[in-house]
Length: 487
Image 1 (cartoon, rainbow, N blue to C red):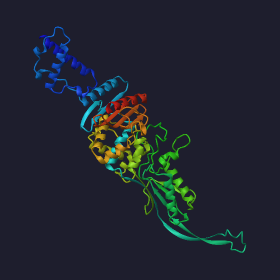
Image 2 (image 1 turned 30 degrees about the horizontal axis):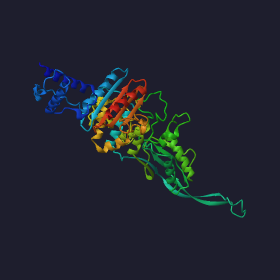
Image 3 (image 1 turned 45 degrees about the horizontal axis):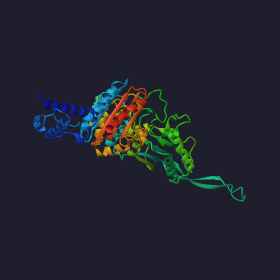
Image 4 (image 1 turned 30 degrees about the vertical axis):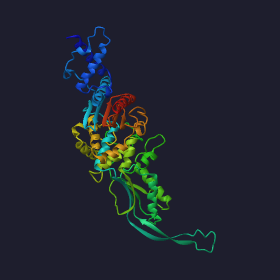
């Protein structure tokens, strides 16, 4: 090999080393065509020989043919992304907890990166993604919750003698007078639909509707119908030692104010929220001017007569989902889950009915029901299991169905802006870019959602950490991955 060939080979080796050492080589520096590459090598070699006192004239150089020179190519965006994510996977190998990671390029319709992606793990509140996608698919964002007030019986006008209040002023007046009153000889029924958005103002409107019947009193009961779901007040697989609270709510078809108004001073929920609901309603009916008998309220788990409609409170699934996803509200998630369960049965809906509906959509998304366990709608249950790949498949299924994707995407927390990731990823490419659902219970930290990459592609991702004793460690790991995906 003569000296000219040696110089050429040394140049090629230096160029290759430079490409490997850089994270990203600007495109304008890449040698894209063999003919151009050969010419650049020729020019650089000639330039180098100018500094060699023993250099031969450049016109006598014998360079190899252009088509025989190896060509240096740029690393593709996907190659760069995989290398960076591989570094994070190697880091995860050193942790004392388990990690599942899956990234799918939705725009390119290809699996971008996986790490333990088929390992089933506890998802915590990222379970809400499964619930939300299933509800948007089977019910639609405009599905209505309807809490209806009915009455039965008859309204009668009665006459009764009462003391004359003017007698004390004018002794010549009769001792008593005849009053005419309208009495409802029947009951008022409120049929619960597990709507967490029913407000105190709605209860006042119900009472006003009763008064607008033109009645002065009720000779009957104010009955709460909770037949919509079964009698279980806690979810399947919820920890036995969890004290019901705003985080771990009692489940009932009759609730109001997100159950916030029915907590005691120590933050614990008052049992049987439906009873409190009916007591407040009875109080408002009295305040509206309608007399009630002593102990007027009752609760029934059997469907009540639905003879005459008095009033309806309506809220959409989309409005319930907003709080469920942004704030990770468990009560709202269970309210959505039991709307799904209600599709299987008109009364006494159970968690199994809800799970059946969610699993039907998981199957449509390509997730085998042998690889997933659905136990509730919120992710509080110890019995929920899904893989990172399973969650990404649901995110992909949503993306491919506009009627699901648009409301789902808008409901997800935005990094550094709102919801449960308002205080995370406040800088960098992930800021205001990542839209994702968090998941946090003891030993579990997860983040799943969407991010727009630097090449304009939309990515779906799921990161699940199980067995981590410090939530901050999981958050840091997840946030760094999101920054990589957004770059």
